[in-house]
Image (cartoon, rainbow, N blue to C red; front, top):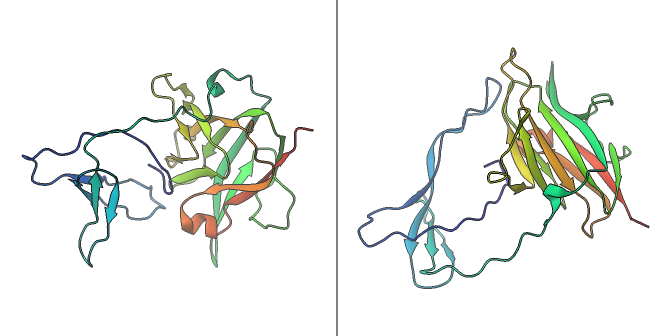
Amino acid sequence: MAPGSRIEFVVAPPGPSVKKAQLISRLVDTGPGGDLDPARPLLNIVTKGVGLNLLAPTVGQTPEFALPATAGNYPKLRFEGLDTANPNALRKLYFSSTDTPSGTNFFIVVDDQAPTLFNPHLPPAITTTQGSTEDWIIENRTDEIHSFHIHQIHFLVLEQNGKPVSPSEAQYHDVINIPYWTGTDPYPSIKVRMDFRGPYVGDFVYHCHILEHEDKAMMAIIRVNPKN
């Protein structure tokens, strides 16, 4: 899971014979230029009647998450039909960075534009129209992992590193990790279908969801014009 991401799933609660049930984060290899992200427990999972409840931990303890005994009904996906939509545009973007005497500059760049640090006063890097769908190919050209995130909408992952994702594994996201570049292999990449068919218009942003990177200007503006 990328930073800031959310995943819904159904899990059977631990039975009486289970002494400890935990949600664990595995070690993440963030690359030679990345940060240390070790394996560690995130939650202790217990059964406490009905309803969901995140119990506040005391200092030094792992949080405890209470599961209901039975699952309820789940709504349909909001982005129905996106997999069969005919995209109105194909765009290519990439993550890049440069080292300077004062630190590292981070960029997310549309392929035919110059790398530019984020500035809210700049014009949008991408302009589209409400009601459209678009396919974006996003590459990571750096030696550390990045997490692509966009506000307001979701997208469907179509390909990873140029290989189609099977329909059974395709999922809707608003944030996803792109592994780091080794320096010799092709750039790691994803191909996603962006969904602008909803009610959202105006200016919003897309960026890397690793906070240090977005805070250092790895961000850009997209403008969605009203359909009419």
